Structure formats: structure tokens, C-alpha cells
Length: 399
Image (cartoon, rainbow, N blue to C red):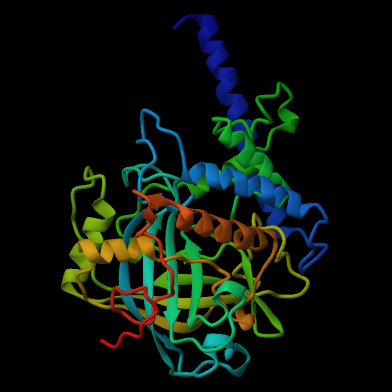
């Protein structure tokens, strides 16, 4: 290596280190900063930015062929979390000793048990090998939940969803910024947003956002059943509380040894574990505390557990089972999940959740409109599940 190259390499490394240190310092400051607003504040132009994002999401569903992915074909997958590692049956038991303040919504009756489905997934727009760095998803659907639901098209459904990933924070603050991100991403640039379209002015770069994004794209865990998941955004919890949600693993058996060169080793590992024994999670909520830096409108700020520890409101038991069958995998593809599959007591709040409502509805509508050989797409659900049977016709299933 020539002297000039060594100097340039040293300058680049130093510059990267300075930017990283700056981003880390910015993140630390954000955690301590007192927020100016703890509730919802809806910008007047948010609807226009939401429309832009929906257009990008639909484009993702019909993503073009490339060297690392095939051309579009049925099933028309979700615009994110396209790859499912499996949908499993679970039991959700509300804590018997739950404090009165937390007896809200689906948790109003201590000791009540719900049947549920959990969809484990990877976050990318198209399925890829499990070895790729990615976010991992945990979508929980409780069944047998009475009451009017928030989505008008599903007002009479008897389900309640909680949608979580394995990161406590998002990497973009607002719907406006997310519209910029998706626009640049749709143009084929994965890093253009963070470097302000590769501007020569480093002060215009979004270094903190990039560091948070890189932290979101994690190496694959040893086991999804031993991974902690978070809601990213905030929710109402009855009339008086705002909370974030988390599912923390409590499974005692070790992760199974599988071939991590297998592109689907996360599914293989989960199959091996659930062939031997049950798995479990603690479902928890973290109440917002007035006067602390726990904003609703900025999902890039992690709510400190020192300021507000998580409280267990229910236990989740993933039963010993065989889930990797052709029929159950098709059922899994049919299921839809949204934070807005919810009763009023668990209303999603904040810009990220308002965006999800519009995008999820339009994504589902578009996928359901697709046809195969002139017929309705058979991969798309028309009703919410009513039990553990693999049936989405709306029929009640007792099993």
C-alpha cells in the first residue's frame, strides 16, 4: 500500500469514527432530553406524505425482477415482513395478580385465557436467506375478543393484534421523513437518504438515523423463541395510560443446533424446539411517565426502563406442535396483521401508527384485488380466524 493510500485510509477511518461517536452522543442526548410534547400532534400535511408512502408500498408488492430476487408472481406478498418463518398456535393468559390500573381492554379480566396465532417473520420486502442481517417480527393475534374494532371494515371481527419486532426503536422520526426515505429507496438507493442524496456537506447527513437503522438490521438470532420483541410505537392502554409493548422470552430449553447455512434455519430451529417442548414469552407493557423523555410522536427515542420498568400483563405459551405443513403455511400467508386490528382501549397512537393504518389497509386491498388466471387470489384472507383450525371463511372452529 502506498503512503498516499495509507493516509487516505487513515483519514477515512478517523472520519467514520468521528461520525459514529457523534451519532452515539446524539442518541444519548435524545434519551435524556425532556420532550416538548408527550401526546399526539398530527402535522397538517401528513396525509400527503402518507399517500406518497402508499404508492411506494404498492410498488414494493409488485417489485421488479433483479439478480437477487425473482419476478413478481403469486402469492403477492406483504410490502414488508414478506418472509414468514412460521405461524404457530399459542395460549395467552392474563396475569391473575394484575394491578387494577392495568386491567384494560383484553387484559380487563385477570386469569382470562385467549387462543392466539403468532407469525414470526423477517422484515425485508422480499424473502431472503436467514443469514442476511434483518429485523425479525412477532405478530400476535388474539381470538375471541369482544367489542367494536377500530377499523370500520373489521368492526365486528373478534381479534386483537399486537405487532412487534426485535428492536426497541425505529430509525426515522416522522411520516414526512419516511416519505423521503421510501422515495429514495424506490429509486434504487439504499443509502441515499442517510447521506442526503450523497451531498458533499456532511452536516446534512442523517448519521443518527443511519446508526439506528444499522442497529435494527441485526444478525439472525440463535432462535426466534429466545428473542425479545418490542412494539416500536406507543398505544393507549385504557383511558389514562400510554404504553409501549414487549414480549420477553422465558423458554428454558436451549436453542436447537441446526445448520446455519440453511437459508431457512430459523424455521428449522423453531421446528426442532417445538417438537420437543413448549416455549413461552412474558407479554409486558411500559407506561409513559410524565416529565420523562418518552414521546409518542418520535419512535427513534427509546423509553428508558429506568424511568419506567415494563410490567407483565400476560403470559404466552407456544404449545409443542408441528406447524410446518403445506396447509398451515398457506394459512399463514393468508393471515393479515395490523396494530389497528384493535379495540379502543388499545388504540395505536403516533405518526408511525397513523401511517401503518393507511399503508396496511391499502396493501391488503391491493393484494386482495390481484387475480390468478382470472380468479380471485386464493392466498388472501377474507375473514379473521375464529380458532385454531386452518379456516378463514369466517366459520367458528372448535378444536
